Image 1 (spheres, rainbow, N blue to C red):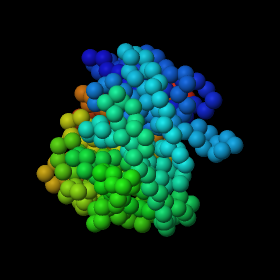
Image 2: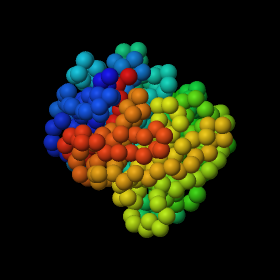
Image 3: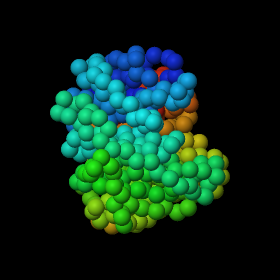
Image 4: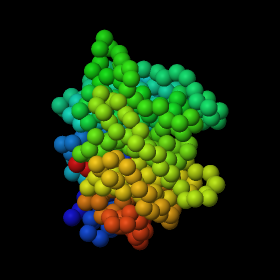
Length: 353
């Protein structure tokens, strides 16, 4: 079976920052189908559940007015993407976005100045204007990376009742009520999660079937297994390293994903240039590190499973390529295939629905 996916890249002034690929899930072969020449540095992508729309967080390098950008909305027209609209997230530029499970809200996070916000999504795929946004304040113990708050990820809980925001600078997952009241986001007291000091929460994913969530922390390269008690309440079950014993080199954790069958949690490391694979006991929520697979490229900022779980596609940002790895669903190991396509600084992936 052939499945379509989209890749965004930090292409600078080059064209084709957003490309359309196809992968054969039997062989792992990939080929490019198309590209969007006016997509500027799409740093994160989200696809609508009905397959009709693609959303991109775009960042434009500093000019006279500093960083600019926002959210671009594309209509999916076969292998082509037609830009419908762009929406600024002033006074800031998002680094992450996601759609609620209902598809009625788009939530976003911004790193530099620690803003997070929410747009309403219409049936036509267009955004109804920024419903609300809020700026985080504070800092963490790492003076180089936590000198201030830094929102890095925003996702809704499985019931769409809450918005969970990973703040790398505050060492927290901050939770807001997804219902915007009086044009504002309101924090849910007693919900969320406080990581160990200096860990740097980066991305959070919820399990599709169990009351579990998994957090990757960038600064200490760990994965935290969490019990979701409802209402955004997150309770730690265990914390697991992503690195082999004795490793002392510089590294930064990046992406975290759950396998389509819900049995595996994978997370990537930039610097060590590897993917750690954990088997999941869904009853207890505990993870077991089964494999740390070294990759054939440099700086794996993002990756994604094929829908059948047979392969993962990886963006090697600093070796400028999209690579395909076969995933061993018994051992958790990755094996690089010969299927690699050059692309300037690939940053993010999403499969078409």
